Length: 439
Ligand SMILES: [Zn+2]
Image (tube, rainbow, N blue to C red):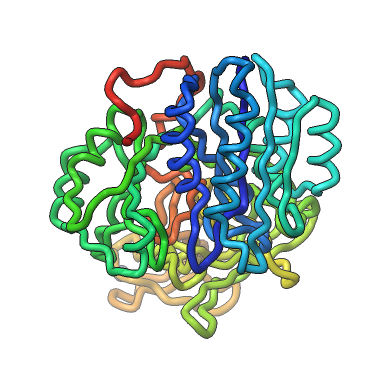
């Protein structure tokens, strides 16, 4: 039998991590004798949902096993979730979903898409699990069942990436991570093009380590299981690595930003991709955020680039009225402001001025002799009543193309610039010959 195990919403801002439970389960289920038919999937969900957990990541484990150990597998999963979830946190509402079957039904795949690109209810998830014959276990308000169902439905059949995640044992979680930053920069150099978002060179910061009491020591993201494994082994840490696992994931794929809409279709908590015209000069507000107004044929919307996006704000500030841009982002608050995640300059407006003509005799600048009276040269006094003003265009520094916030401010799902052109359109199931997890 093939068993798909979805997990979500076990973490909280103060600790825990759904991927750590996955890593524990990889070890425990391997001991039970199951065969993993794919890397564990780490599925990031719609980042605009305010009740999300910290990283908004759900997990699916897909295993092949004898019918005889199905009960044992389920018991192991439930025990791990109960042992490692952070039940103290109000926003932590774990969910586990089991689905048995060789193929994932289309209804589950459609649901998975909705959870990345929109908002769905717990009732929808429970109805669907019932329809397809799955099993769901929820804790507290059970919201984690939504993400757990979506993780099973998201088979990562199109664009995807990988992440090598190394973990520390629970007793080390409160200690400061000892990581050799030089090894991170060296890995970044050596693995350029094969990994992404390792460091933010402008901010002089490494990005592979989380902050706070998280079991993750570091995670390296990249294009293939081979490359993230190689990169992960290049990182030097000053503490014992308890375990590591390679995940297959939708990180860095823009999976949430696939639907182009009009301003009138913008909905709170939904991602949005809209082609608009800039209609107000961007202004800086308190806190260093930059705001400007845009429109399309259906209405108006304000867009904002927040302070942490770094010099992305410089690009946004250089916009002028009439610029045609595609904005990517989401609306999180009641203010209906689009929180910019990415911007594409489609057609910068021209800055055209009318100026007095040059003198046809000496080349000097001419002056007007009054309305309809033509022009007179300031230098040689040549007059010509038939001359009129000429057009002159000022150059724009804003080039066509896509602009993103500084890497430290990018979302897990945002496709970084270095991934453009590397999108995968298919997936052929093929596991590494070398180990993809330890222990
Ligand atoms: Zn002249």
